[in-house]
Length: 291
Ligand SMILES: NC(=O)c1ccc[n+]([C@@H]2O[C@H](COP(=O)([O-])OP(=O)(O)OC[C@H]3O[C@@H](n4cnc5c(N)ncnc54)[C@H](OP(=O)(O)O)[C@@H]3O)[C@@H](O)[C@H]2O)c1
Image (cartoon, rainbow, N blue to C red; front, side, top):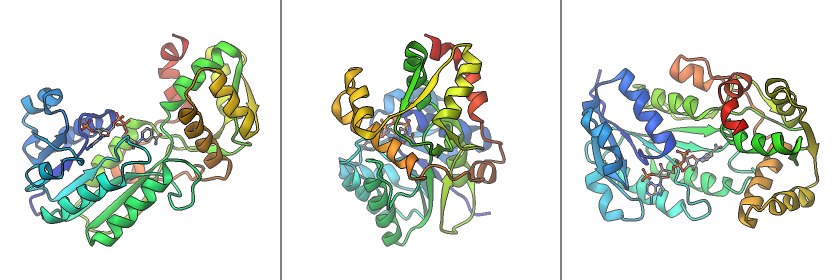
């Protein structure tokens, strides 16, 4: 087996740390490079032997040294929605120049046609990867199950889970399972090019989420399906900034048109672990929802 050096970008983010944790359970720390804009925040991983380096996609001069020696690289999409394609392009160019063989990228389901406001950046980044000639695994992560904690907090207070998803379903996936899938893709020897939906084990509508949460919380929560304008009004009325309301509305539209409904076996296939189902996740996070 050839010697692999596995690199995780954005390693100090929530997903990045979970990927490092997964890798450390399966491989030698000396085989892992973690890049971040904040190396000091990964001192605990450096102490375990992980090679922590500075990298900022918006400081291209930082990337050659940061990526040197990597053979497989996980490019975690940045959080600069609408303004990250050039950042990702620099990272992909630097990975190519550094001799990386295979890039793994965290994308979004149905990236090319999804109304989700995050989708155009992902579609553009996927195209840059395809055009780069690098081997690739595109991981199209579904909505994080964690996103439901905030909406269920509000629903618990009001008794209403407002949405605009028109009965559509989402196969929510936990960050931990996304991290397990990403770590698994890094650890593989394969250079096969693949684009995979990464999902939880089942898809749920907002009515399902309301029913499950009602049972777990012991309080009746009704799913309230609104039209787009009323949903946005409900969000801005609750004090959310307009751009956040637009983003959340676009996720509802994506769910409504079925973009997030596909249940895949990617987590199981890549990590040999069964993904966490939504009821079990909510059960484990009841205190957070209630606080
Ligand atoms: N599917 C979903 O529901 C969902 C939800 C939220 C986010 N996401 C996407 O998944 C990604 C990871 O999620 P998360 O929960 O870990 O988000 P997060 O904790 O907010 O992490 C943001 C990430 O962006 C990186 N980053 C930002 N600017 C960068 C730059 N100039 N150069 C290099 N890296 C940069 C950060 O790296 P450092 O700080 O270490 O440099 C960090 O890894 C997000 O960035 C977003 O694209 C998906």
